[in-house]
Length: 217
Image (cartoon, rainbow, N blue to C red):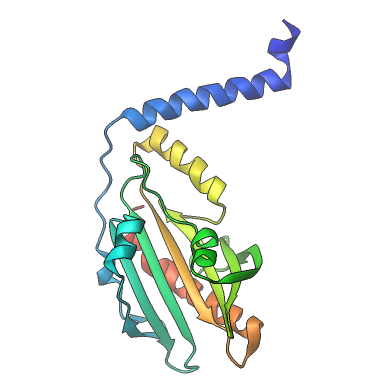
């Protein structure tokens, strides 16, 4: 009987309860909240202006299986800095459809990673900074700073594992599993890697509150 009171037993019991609850949560029919189409995201965001509306090939759409997509390039009016914004929104993850991690997609497209870590980025109106993945990649002579996170219910999550846990918890508590992958890419130019990272952080700080109304809270 001593095993039943051990920490190991309590952990196993908690995992069993979570598994049962998750199975129940994922069996219920889901009614995701409505969201405003991403194409309605403003063309002007702070000092940034829409420079190009990107085209997403049908083959890519078929692979992603997202319910809504946004692919744009913005340019800062004063500094002329450039930042690409990609958003993939999923109304439900119960059928196995889920965001594709850039850590898997970018190397598959020929980009070679050189650094990966999580950094905090301050966002106006939020008491705490949001955690964002910083991913440095290169292909030939091109180098880019990639910043990405998972956003749902007003929450930003960097870790893929944490995002999965939140999906289970949201299914149990709120009967919903909607989420979005938000990715920002800034090319490394003459200013170097640090300058590109600062541009990306500035853009993320402005785009995060702008995206909030388009991703259900």
